[in-house]
Length: 436
Image (cartoon, rainbow, N blue to C red; front, side):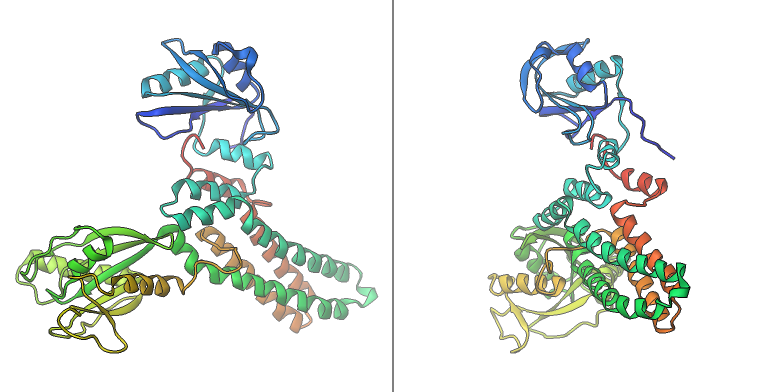
């Protein structure tokens, strides 16, 4: 079990490797003192004000910008010092060694953000959103993470938590003073509020279907018979020649992937081998990979060649969209999705239909979205506990209802970190990069 101590830690907070600028951060009670011992204009350091000067890293020197943030007005709630030096790994490592020689130690993964959480600067879900923002692969993922970092989920969860706490308090009073005979009245008054909380939890649960796709992207498999135009369609949707296209059937032997954004959401297209009786083992393996790609995709584009319209059976857990290709030589069915991979006709409409099928036509509802699997499991747990509480109320078992409410409160508290265990915190912050 890792317990945060109060020594001073340091790490590279910018991306590793060579670059124009490297940002080295320290946090802890000695951060400002350590920086002052090796920075030429330490006397000019003021809260949140950049100062240009020379940093003596022992092995070498560099012209840097330095800034300090005094506790508690910093990211971690402690004294924080940052050096913005030139981004050579040699310089960055020399700066870190200098800080360690003066009393700092190297930070663990996620230690800065964990300190921010333990100082009350961030709730646990807000801290996780910081990691999501760093890892965001699309505009929608970045916006969802930003909303989480600014407390959107925390406010929703705390609102439900407060209502349940009120019900739990009334039940405790009813159980502690049975001679007052207030159990029946308490149950009747609690049920409407309980159902209101159940409805709010249900909204959060439903948001996850879109939320996980916003965070991780949408996988779209393109399947069909050989020469249906799958590779041409992938290239057209991507706007680049990602897949090799020839008139010969069986050109695609392996899956080929490429990504694009639509309405800020990342879509990864998987071009697959044409499914038919294979002529050799290489093609057979390609067909097997095609079948696996279809099985695990969120969306399957079943490409049907209008010159020989055959709809291939598809085994998938996703949504199948029939795409009629080659409208440049034949008309598609009235209700069909017609495209021409050759000319590009219909592909913009196809992008919209893929988005609508994947996201239900919208990214979020009410501005609160669950994108994190841990949060989703805990909200499901809380909803199950509330269903048990309602059943207990119906059976006049106030003691069982009280226990179920306690379970729901514990689950919600684990989302925000109000009652998270050290094991949970260790697991969450171990996923962060060093330096954040």
